[in-house]
Length: 187
Image 1 (cartoon, rainbow, N blue to C red):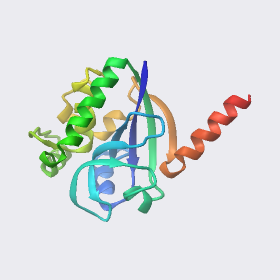
Image 2 (image 1 turned 45 degrees about the vertical axis):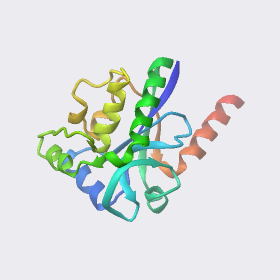
Image 3 (image 1 turned 135 degrees about the horizontal axis):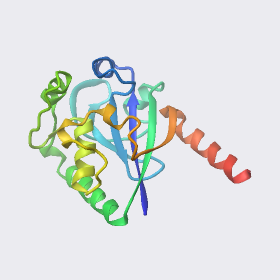
């Protein structure tokens, strides 16, 4: 068995503010990580942390890019136990996108369509939630009951299949995780 991590975030940018208010949930972005350190987190988002105009496949890190600028980013980190085969498939599916990132675009139209409850699926185009859900589904990890292009970040919020590991400032994740681990081992 292996663990993977689903991370929902709210950065406070104008775009995340709009997504949060339209979806009526606390988090506007979702990423996936293959290890507890969350290095890296994979998603679709800003290629340049200073502007949302250029977006695509991204490898995010807690203290780099947009998260270095937005130190008050709130998050929820969930874990999910999966089989070794599912983990290998997930890794391969993410690497297929990573190795061919020039083929993929951020699906701005899908973002607009999701806001009016009209999900859209276009080849080689993703928003963050569609990407994470698609990688899970293509890896035979069935935790969502809808098509990947219909998934929104809030669909991961309190999903029964996931275990909430941490909630708070993303920039404090390492410090909080390590202090929790120390407390448990000292007990």
